[in-house]
Length: 362
Image (cartoon, rainbow, N blue to C red; front, side, top):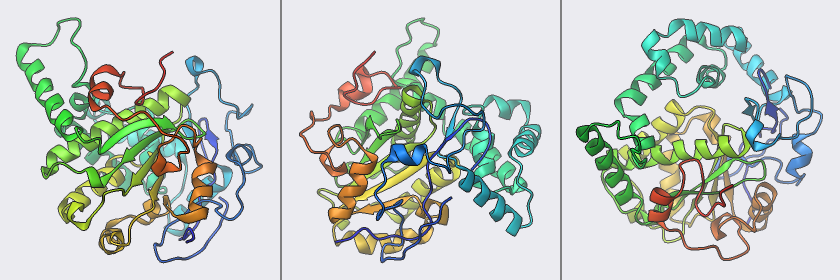
């Protein structure tokens, strides 16, 4: 069985302040992409090849983790050129510095306090390929969502109030959130474990372990792990994106979430976390998954489809070995050795927020 491709792959690079594709195109029944599946070039070579672009100049080598520069990863000259071309074809000028300045100017002082980080405007500008009006509309929508969905509370609900600054009522709210996420995580259906070869956190999703039908709590659980994977990537490598590995052991159509939950998930991933997913690897999906995929792919944005890789058979193994150190990944991601069984309690209560499960602490 082969790995089936859809369209252009994204070359990888380190981006320091601005900008940046190499085209490789094939069609297949899943309509998805795997970068350079037939020319299995080591990622280290891709990262340092002629297309890589480092705006600040200097080496592409990652610095020591305690002195990481601000980076926005996976951006090459060709990737930047593609954005410029797409913007031009739609009648837009593509200028990242001006775009970010305009977005910040359009935000109210309160909205600026809600920014996830200083690169959030740039991610939205890039995602909209220079459509400034749409980038402003969407970042405002995301900031409103982050506040109303209590994303910051979700991130900190397992923290200890060592200073005793929280009121009893406030602590109860956070405890209730922690209970929700702990219950949702009981079966280990989502968690972070390890990194790809370029230091991006790996987020494992196993739909066959679904234990809840509460859509809102499902989304809280998802958001907690997205935020945690982002924090792990940032601490580990200074990058901004995460890898998602979806394994289908134990999956049946009865495990498939309702369409409303699928659409809610995609709204969050595509609308509120643009330019955060490096790639999603759908590993050895069963035949029954095809019916489910035909339905949900109608709601997947083309730019997201480009980043989805169906990994099956020998070629899927090659891709997983290319992107991951398979001595440190789980079986569903091509892992070659038995890993310690996941402990939800250890991960949620005893592991720092910016560390993956079973990660050694410095």
